[in-house]
Image (cartoon, rainbow, N blue to C red; front, top):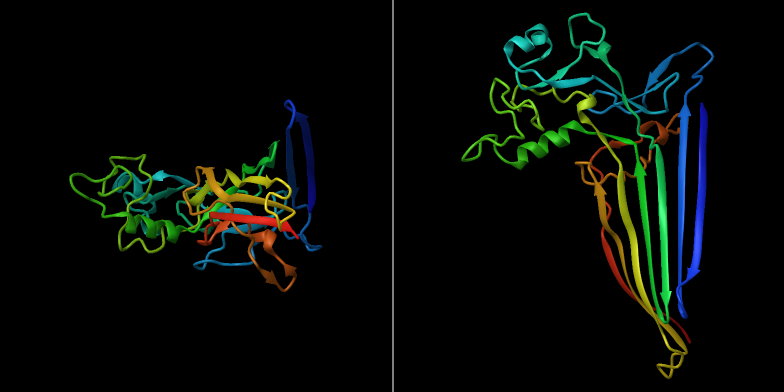
Length: 297
């Protein structure tokens, strides 16, 4: 495998009048990786180390990044019975996700799977800000990652649709849902849900791949340095209020775009890089608030 990357950091510090000091540091990282060889037998690809719902969402393929997403290519929804008819025996029905027949054999099968995204971001970066004026200090850290994709576990999204409410609430069906056997709202967010669709729409496909870009305020702290001997028996002290993960800006529909690394090890050792970006419903990052004091005696 070949890895190419670049890391950089730029900082600046200045004063704004007497007693005021501020600084800013920006750091970023960009990398690309590509599989050049798998073994000495001429193997072109192998699927990832873990199967979910008897499917595997990732593949390692020559010329592609490690752990690329692998699945069917979604193409909207089947509009009506005539639209679904060519693939009826495969599970196509009006309102279900429409998949492309990439190999042109007249059937929707595993042979139509393709690379549908990469979990590796195009760029990650952070911004550290500090301001000090007199005894007051303010600091903040912002982090962002851009371009990486997330493969959402489709049954979790399907369950969220069911829990979100009935398909036909009064006074009219919501536009996000397909509720009839004929698609009148092709821009709906969710496919038609029915009891007989146990597997077809929930196959791993590009429908379930989302942009995982986000910007997060990781920390914000406001502190005050108490004047020396302000408290007779405390020579020096600092009080502060800190908030962590105060807000996240993202278009991702899941709980948290900052997915933790899978603690996954196989016969060959650490295989976490082969299963990045697959959201199995991880617990979201906590928002925490802290009030503290530091001192010496």
